Image (cartoon, rainbow, N blue to C red; front, top):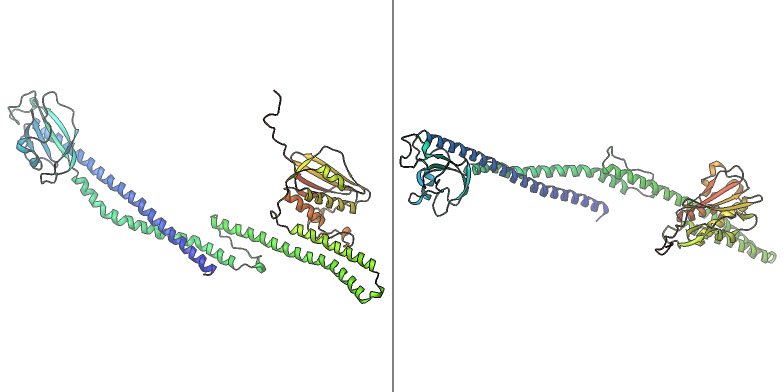
Length: 480
């Protein structure tokens, strides 16, 4: 399978997974919302039924006070009217199957003062009787009225005046259940439909979001070493896709710069290698053509010098081409003044001062300082002065010489590879233009930097390195 087909399959997998997640999530959330909505409809209708039951209690009590005869069905809800010590006065026909031998279903009111209205009584109807109420649990609200307040000629003349009449009205769930059943079809049809619509919308959004990604992928797949100058169009937005395009363009810019520098480095290295190789080859060819007139000691000396130049150039190239992290630095404590002292010769001198320590590879640091000293000695007229100082968290090595100053335009360029200023362009005497580049490379690998500092007379080069951290005091240090 090609990479393009694999990426297309990955994009389709993303769409499918997104649709599946949205569909399942929407179904779960909407189902939960539908259940809550159905329960709310049921609860609201049940609350309305309870209010209706309270109204019916009031109506029955008012009728009793007015001396009306209560019997049979009365109102929309089942009721039971009791007097005295449990005498069943009247009830709805729905309750007949449960009032065995005239015994009421609900408790008797007894004697005493009338209680407050609308108390709730839980009741469960047994299943043994065939009825719509069989096996159902609900509550009944009640109300009481003293027998003494009943109008003469009312319900019963045998009830003691101190007794009570109590009416129970049952809050049936039938109306609430019917209301819930009415919304069920809408919920059953609406939940899957809305989930489907959300999935389609999510799929469209994902497809639209992945189109720029697909465009970026297609354009990136066409990039080669020959067209690294091309860039990915950045969408006119602030979303992560635009950030991705900007990141890819930044990466391409760095990659193009690295490839360009690598190509330039290869070309410059080949050019520098060609000169000593040409000299060696010409020397050998002349000796082969005129063996009888060849000065072999001088010939061997020139071959040795050419081979030595090739060795130095090769070592410098290998150091500059070494990737970071391939050969880890030897982290040792290095005292810079002790390291610099043995390297001084000729007009170079070290200014006195306190010891300054850094952590790093002593061989690399020695090479960096030696390159600076060789560069300064080569251009100096009469003196080279080296100073070492600690400034805050930085160890600074400064090399001054009284030679020609570095032009302002070349302050940074002089540390590039194969750069030789006009005064040092002679390959026979001025080197390969790698000495300062190696200094900056070594300083960078030690988390430092090397640079040229403008000055009124002569030239000044500086190496900045992180100062070695002071050791933490041990628990036993200090005085009691």
